[in-house]
Image (cartoon, one colour):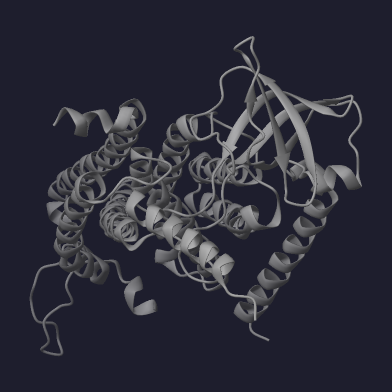
Length: 76
Length: 151
Length: 239
C-alpha cells in the first residue's frame, strides 16, 4: 500500500498530476451543470410570466389545429 | 459563383497565404527555434563566445566525477563528433552514459562549460522485463556474430 | 447538416445521447485509471513517473483534437453560416483550454524529475503554450462584443488564423531539435510503446473523448437555453 502511494519516490509528481486533472475536469463539469440548471430555471420563470401570449389551441377556418406556439416548440 | 462558394475560396486562399507566411517566418528564425546544436552542427558552424545549448548522447565510459565532489566531466557525442563538457552541480535522475543529454553553457578553450544539464530521453516506453530481454537479445546477437567461424 | 440546425431537434438528440456518453465516460475513466495506476508496469528508465503519461498524453491529444474541431466549426460558421457551428466552438473552448492546461502542468510535473527542469522554451512546449493562449484569446474575444454575432465572427477568424499552430505542434519534435522527445504512438513505423502501456493510454484517451462529448453537449444545451432567454427578454422589451 505504502509502496503504491510512494510511486517509487515520485509521489510528489504523480499524485498532483492526477489530482489536477481530476480538479479541472470535475470542476468544468460542475460549472457546466450549474450554468445549465440556472439557465433552465431562468427560462421557466420567464416563460411562466407570459401566460397571455400563448396561442389558443383551436381549429382554424381550414379545420386544422393551430400550429404550436414557439414556446411549445422550444420545450420539445 | 455563389456567395457561399466565394467565401469558401477566400477562406482557402487566406489559409494558404497564412501557411506560407508562417513557413517562411519559421525558416528565417530556424537558428533561434532550434533548441540545441549537435556536436557535428557545432563543428560545421562554431558559435563563438556566447551561451548556447549542446545536445547529443553521453559517450560511454566518459563520465568522471572530480575529487572536489561537485564537478563532473563527460563527453557529448552524436556518434560522428564529440565535445568534452564540465559541469558543477547535481545531475538529473536520468543522466547516465549512453543517454541523451542537453547542456547549456559556453565553449572555453575547447571544453564546453555547462551551467545547466538536462536529460533527454527517447520515445521508447517499455517495462523493465522487456528492456532486459532486449538487452539479452542484443548481447546474444553480438556474441553470436563474434562466434561466427571464418570460412 | 442543416437538419440539426433546429434547436428543438438538437435538444431531443442531445438528451438521447447524453446518458450514453456520460456512462461511457465513467466506465472508461474508471477502467483507465485502474490500469494506469495499478495494473500497468513502470517504465524501464522512467519508473513510476511514466504514469503521468496516462494523463499528459490524452490531454495533449484532446487539446489538439478540440481545437481542430473548433476550427472546422469556425469555417462552417464563416462559409455556410450554420447556426450550431458558432455555438459549438463557444461550447468547446473551455474544454479545450482545460485539457491544454492539464497537458502543460502535468508535462511540467513529468519534466521536473525526468529532464531536470520544469520548463524549457523548446518548439514543442512553446507552441503548446501558444495553443493555450489561443483558447483563452478566443474565449475573451467572443465575450468582448455586445453583439454576439460579431463576437462569434471575430472568434472564428482567430480560430482559423491559429490553426497553423496545430501542425507546428505536431511536427515540432521532428522539424527542430527539441528537448521533448519525438512521437511514440502516431508515427511512421508504428508505436514505440509497449502494449501494456499503450492500453491504458488509449483507454484514458477514449474516456477523455467521451467526457468532451458529454460536456460539450451540456454546454450546447445551455447555449440554446440562453438564446431562448435572450429572445424572450427582447420580445418582452418590445411587447
